[in-house]
Length: 136
Ligand code: ZN
Image (cartoon, rainbow, N blue to C red; front, side, top):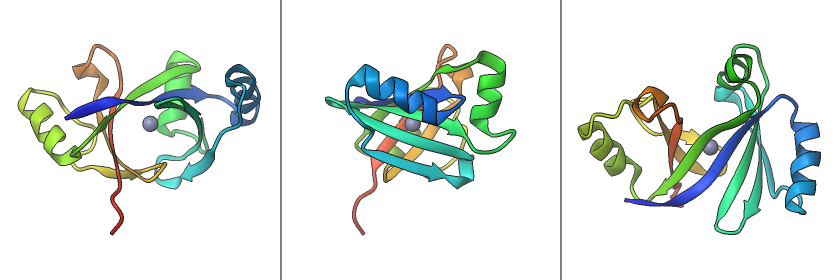
C-alpha cells in the first residue's frame, strides 16, 4: 500500500550552496547528510512536516544525478512514496505493467529500502518507492 509522499528529491549542482538556499527557504538546518557510494551521490535531508526534502549532488562523473543535470538542469528529480511492503508493491505495480530500474529493492539513504519506477512508465516522473528498514 502507498502511504504518503515520503520525500521529494531535488538534483543540485553543488550541495553546499544548495544547503544555504534550502536552509534559508525552510528556516531550518538539514537533519542528515549521507553519501550513497553505489549511486555516486551526496544526500542531505530536511524535515518538512510529514514529508522531507532530499537534496542530491553527484560525487562522480556519469552518475545518475550528473547525467540528469546535464540533460535537464537542476530541479525536481524524483517523488518518493512510502510503502508498507516494498516487495508487495513492486509486484502489484509490475502486474500493472510498470517497469522498475532495479529488479529488487536496494539499500538507499536514510535507512530505507528503495526501488525506482522507470520514468517512461509514469509520464516522465521518476517515482521512488521506499520502506523504512526494520530493525533486524
Ligand atoms: Zn529519494
